[in-house]
Length: 136
Image (cartoon, rainbow, N blue to C red):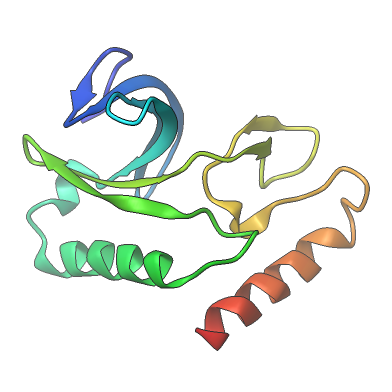
């Protein structure tokens, strides 16, 4: 279920949609308790009743929580309200993963692309991120 601006998920107030894909939707939200903007990655409704998808979502949260790297957004927690499950993540402003010409708020730093090295940087960034993740 897409969340509109002003909707609430626990203490988080949705400000705007950032993006959507097969694994859910990502929103910019305001943490009303800590007065900071965060990214909320929601699990699609169609996955909410699937035990395998729920387990995968939980594993994703656990893996993110175990990592600490400048190119990986930090996770602040999990939120569940009214059958909506969400990862609460660090909101990272920066270029879109598909290239420096497409800029937007991007909460997952896995494929961060810098305008200076837009040809060489993506493969190097991917390798460094995987290397950091595998060392954990």
